[in-house]
Length: 340
Ligand code: A2P
Image 1 (cartoon, protein in one colour):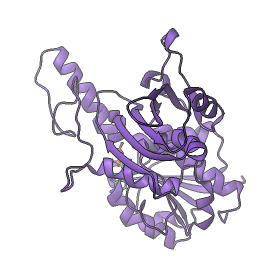
Image 2 (cartoon, rainbow, N blue to C red):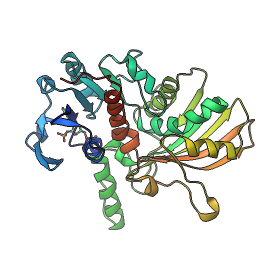
Image 3 (cartoon, rainbow, N blue to C red):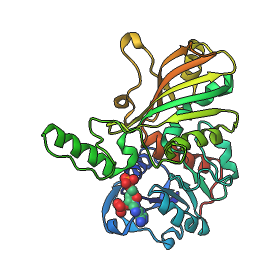
């Protein structure tokens, strides 16, 4: 069969499972698939493209003969195994934070900066989920009106933390409704019926690493150091799809109609903005969808050239698995990957 030898590292995880689903849905050309995870999952059977595949433990030699590896097993695993894969001639698309800000590693959202892929040296980073959906909405506006400043607050689903966090929200919700004691394991506080203004670790200036990722990655992907970004990232008791309240200030005046027209034509964006009919982006609308939904677009008259909007996307799909596979498709379609 013509196609690539593909490895998915973290194939049993929340993002890994979506990667397999999307590879199937988009009929990605696959010769052999290798499902990799930790030793704990070795031997587990997973159905992929009507074939029963066996999960293997990830070891350096897992990558022999692989053309492309999609990593989503966390930063530490990427730090250990991504260089091993690259050493063996594999092109790695890494969903972790391990290499994103390395100047030698392209950080890519295909709707925004696909050209960066032409300089890849075997390792490509997939940006943070909240950053991806934000830059898909911001790029067309930046190109026309030049964004000077972004103030973003996120409402992030638990699926972004992984499988165990999804279970924790389910179990805590049931326990609370049954008036039972809740158990804490993934999050430091109750997540059911609560919100946590805390995603990833805090730094000495009081920001979380998730906030820093949004601030730093946005500038790298948009390739413009002049854009000022500040972020507050919040975990909410939603299973899947992240929401963001985004306030921007542009150099050139933009009307609501101009922004709506622009975003209606933008790749990967769907404008859902009809308040009169109670239509606006929500996680339940974005769940399972490829597009970034944008609505509640309105002028912010408290500043010069201000715009407010509400942006929602499926964080496991566009925020992670889909974006990685779109990168793989671009590499393939542009001859940027050697097929063995
Ligand atoms: P495993 O199922 O064997 O634990 P999530 O983000 O949903 O928590 O998933 C994390 C993914 O990373 C899972 O597929 C998990 O596999 C994988 N993983 C965890 N530790 C390792 C490891 N040491 N080597 C390879 N994969 C790992």
